[in-house]
Amino acid sequence: MLSCYQAFIILSYLAHLSSDSRVLLGSIRPALTFFYRSRFTRNYSSRYIRRALAMLHEAAEHGNGSAMSFLGLAYSEAWGVPQDMKKAIYWLQQAADTGHQLARYNLAVAYDNGLGVTRNRVQAWLLFRGLATEGYRDAQFGAAHMLFYGEGVVQNYSQARYWARQAARQGHPEAMQLLGTCLLRGLGGPIRLPAAQRWLKRAVAGGSCLAVKRLAESWQHPANTVRPESIVCYLERLLEARSKTVATQALYTLGCVGLQFPHLLPARRNNVTEYFRWAARFKHVEAALKFAQLQGEDF
Image 1 (cartoon, rainbow, N blue to C red):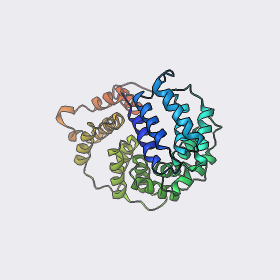
Image 2 (tube, helix red, strand yellow):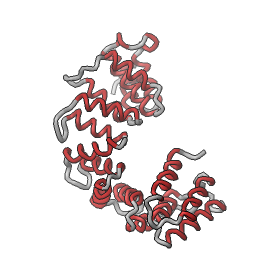
Image 3 (cartoon, one colour):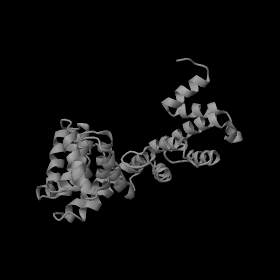
Image 4 (cartoon, one colour):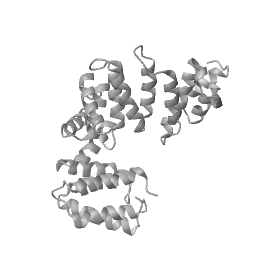
């Protein structure tokens, strides 16, 4: 079964083909098809992988940025070749030199996390910023994140808020969460509670677990106008979320709401400890601690 991540990789590269002036359609598209057929196997003897790699190398030698970038990812993820981070970085750098956006983004991530290179957050910041100005959504969030936490660059909430908004407008869930956090706490600008809650709800819908925590924080704000009954109904709906982390955070938050407003919990779940117990089963640390405290355990 092809994972969502692998399917995303295929679609991302297909999307980049149309903008690559050096693309060899007779080589790249079939190569991606062979990777798809092999389900990104690590079986180095797979005929699909061998043919795909041969096609990618041929295209890369002709200066194709998409082929270089995919080769970098193949060496990084060990798709049909032994994992070799030095070769991965080499091909990503070659692709980045052609201006290939996805390669530049992956290179920035490598520098940010020290993957195959010495960790260099200043270099990561420069790459993220360059891509962000070109409208690349993930890089805009990367720039916002670094500015928010002061990683590789001087902390600047105003700029973090700006880049988070740019990425959020393009549908990036964690950028929505970061923007909501800035609006909620008045970082880089005035507090805008209703707008913060709107962005945070959109982030939750996109699968952001942290956005659930930030929403819970917003409900405790003195200017909050959302009724507790509405909060409980919203959290109950989140229990059916596709994202397990979102559903788990909703369980924990429901437990916290139940401690404050026990009469609002549904009759079938009126035992507050059950929320914490179930969240703890999904490895939610705070829920585990809260459950232990309610059981009378001392720390």
